[in-house]
Length: 222
Image (cartoon, rainbow, N blue to C red):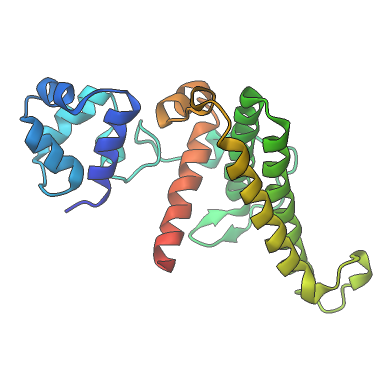
């Protein structure tokens, strides 16, 4: 049984604020059966898969978790907006170029900061920025230490402590974000794939692809 379909089927309905009863009626199945599909207790046939794709205006590849975007398209480097520094397009990891990886990251950050701008909470923005800053700092230090001849005088904090302190700083920022978001109106923070794709037609494939690839990595660590 496809593991992604139940999650995505439920996600599409809930993001569009459609009741399970209404969706079942529109799709021509019993509510109990749709519930089984959404919980992964039953596997639907091809006819139902096509009906769902038409109903939610998404591709079957998206429904099956084969694509991170609803259109089902495969994201290519040329489709993503350029960033100022592209660097050398060397290969890294699963046949994805460094340039492509950078575009995914930079466009995703653009979306994050636009969302933060709409929320307009300085403390939240600073906490998010702190995490991103410390992540870049930590990664740079890890790369920096690869060459033993690099002088440590570039940094004030000793190498053996820097990454651990950066981790602590990120945890504190995460705690700050949790505290701040408890007091923010849910309406102002509403986020869905529908809103992301409609509001950021060019950048959204980057963020959605980054989320999908990150979860694939995390699943291996569970």
